[in-house]
Length: 257
Image (cartoon, rainbow, N blue to C red):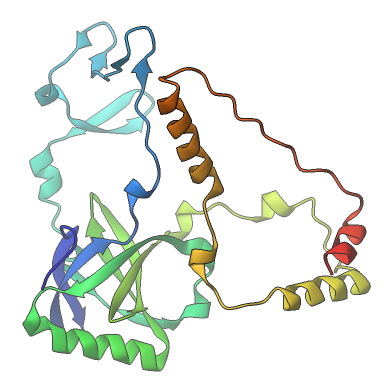
C-alpha cells in the first residue's frame, strides 16, 4: 500500500482474538509553520548547542546516560539496553480493551492525532470490519500504546476510509480546573442576557468548514519574512492597530445581534 510518509510505528491492532497488521502516521505537519534558528547577529552564523558539565566542560556523547532523580541532586543511571529490556506488550500490540461513547471523554484529555492504516492487503478486510463496526455503533475504542519511551492511553475512531488514533492524557497529567475558576460566581447567568447569547449562537451556527479559518499570525509572519528578503535583512516594522475598546458586555451582545 503506498504511503506518503514513513510510518511512525508498525504493529498489531488487536480486538479479542483478531490481530491486524497496521501502521501509524503523524496526522499533523510541522512544516506548515515557519521555523527559526538562532543566529549570531554579528557573524550571521548558526548558534550550536554543546553538551557541557559544570567544572568539566564539553563531553562526548558516549559518556551521556539517562538519569532518574530519586532525591535532590542524586540520580540512578540507566543504560539504553536496560531501558530496551523493559518489554511491554504495547510496544508491538495495540489491544482494544474497552469501548465508550465519544461524549464520555472530556475534550481536555485529548492530545495528538495520528492516522492508522492497514499495513498490507491481507490486513485490509479485517481493518475495514473494525472501522465500520466502530462507525455503526458510534463507539470509540480505548487501548494503550508504547511509543517513544512512553506508554500512551489512546482512543481509536473512524476517519474517512481509515482510523484516527488520538493520544489521551492520563488523569495525573492534568491540572484541576477548580483553582482557576475559584473566583467565578456560582450564580447562573441573567436570563435576559442568556437569551441574547443563545440567539447569537443560533445565528452563527453553521457546518464546520476548517478551510474557512486562516492562521493570521503565520500569514503575517510569512509576509514579514518576504519583506525582510526584499530589504536584504534591514529592520522592518509592522504597525499593529489595537482593537477599539467597547462598552459593557450587554451593549456588545445586543450590537452583535
